[in-house]
Image (tube, rainbow, N blue to C red; front, side, top):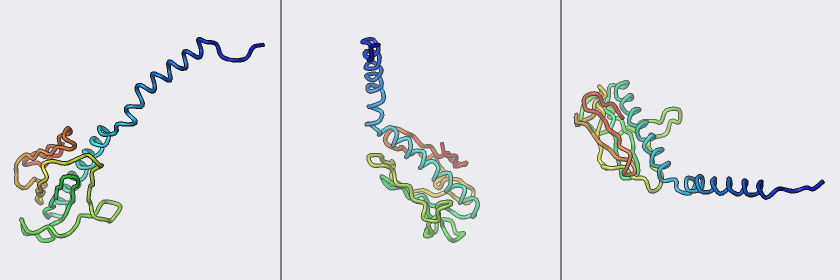
Length: 147
């Protein structure tokens, strides 16, 4: 009774290992696309939450956008255009709602805008953001729909 592997079994195992290494390793090493998509999903969630808070509290919510982060602040007064000085709390956590994008992922353009008490963007135009240079986020005028 001989023990061991045949040459065909060894070749099959090495072939499968080579295919796995060729397909899986680049995906494990280069995480840029994964980080960009994940960052875009976080930004979309934050924008949708900002719109809901604005409508629920009947106040403006300011969206402060920096090249690598996004922060939400509430206008504590019913006066449109007043300063947004109260940080919006992250649901379930209680801390300020700030999205920090992964390293190497940026957000452009780095400008701010507001959602009014009806959930519309101020200024009332279609706003286009890009995460990581490849993933677009569109905020529709009049409805404030985040896509």
